[in-house]
Length: 271
Image (cartoon, rainbow, N blue to C red; front, side):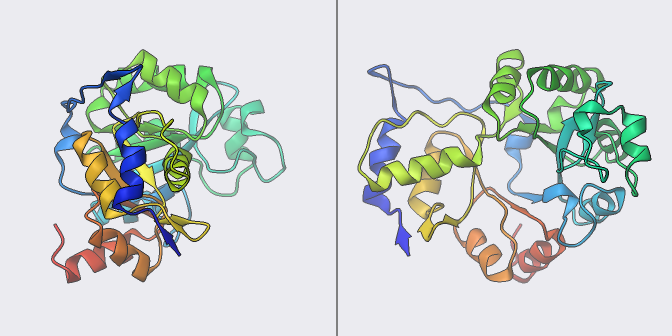
């Protein structure tokens, strides 16, 4: 197992400080969610313990005082629905169907993102836009703005176009770096390359490891904290890995098993 250690990571870490040949100044953003000590994030509501993206899952996650991660997609009639899959059971794409049609072709109730945010008004909501769609990002901004929930809302996407559009429209709102950004930093660091761009987003999300390479290490966490980034261990699901994530002193863990993680935290007297 290869570990990105202090000396290696700092090669990449040093590039966070330089932009266009000048020293970059990092400042903390003012936002209520950034003041929280720890984020237990239930991926798709906790899909390892309840049906993904269902009210049953979100009820269970809220009972664990978890942040509600919701995979979202845009329907033909501009409704943002909770769904990891881009298709319904018939094989048709969600983007080609109206909300009514999506629900008619799905056995279980498909919530909209706004239904989730309205029902769980005390829970932070992490929306992950899976569509590579600029209109989806624009529509999401408008809905969050109208609902007045930007103080408990985080946006992420594995697709750069909607993520960039969202950041450009609302730079003061919270976003997360794509998971593959952390992997790229770690991989380049192992080669001693310095041409790594600065971390973008308020949350730096990364898996514990990939391809037998430790992605999240204590040096990486410390360096990210110096840049006022919250570090989240992403998609961590078994007991041993969850325990390891907590030992790294990350700012949050995203898991399919929120009740399991809450139990581990209680046993360790973790806040």
